[in-house]
Length: 296
Image (cartoon, rainbow, N blue to C red; front, top):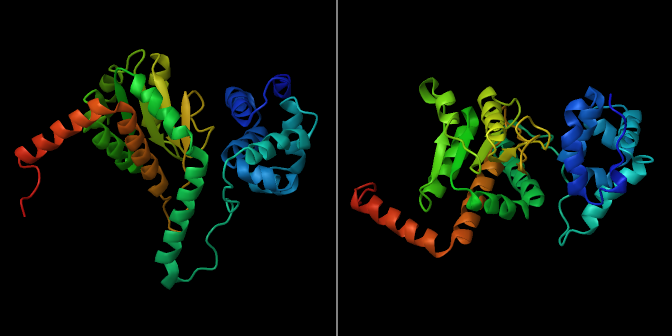
């Protein structure tokens, strides 16, 4: 294991700490990786819970959290935790502290209601973590001469939603889908200065990881829409948008991920301004004139 770094000497904000952890994550031990992942994925809880509770939530021993803090260059847990406390203090509005609340004690006839409550909670958490990040991601995409979007299996609808809405007012957007075994061919279209958006959550699809790696290798900007700041598609990303997906159902909820795609589309349209409006009007007229919609 590499020698401890000392981020507290230079890292003054949560974002800087997160960048340091992401950079060093592959070299951490499995216990440290579990603890570090929880720090980045549940920062609100770190700010309000005891160290033992944080360790319990991260499924590691309490001593591992102390050693992780020291390994990162802090004198102890309290010094590391202060970064998370400061993050909460500096937010303009208080955010939910129910991050670890799961739907419990439900009966079969309450499943639909429990699902709705979980989805609402996911949206709340996702908005809390990405309130400012949507604008940052939109600025990256706006500057790129071409944008590639990828999402596979259950993440395909999220990626397609982003593609469809974005293409209505910007032509230079394409979907990486890998149909008929053409993934390698499509990856060759990613070029330097392009931007690539990849959507994926655990267990992460091999195709999503390959797209993310290709974007980094080719010098394109990478935006990860994912469930963890240390997911395989996030570790080398230029910008990360984390979504919550808790659900009482057998399958994770993608409502919050879809909401991020919709928020990103709206922000992009606002940034593009008059040119986007003109393109949107042209696309809308073409759809109507070509009979894309029923007259009834």
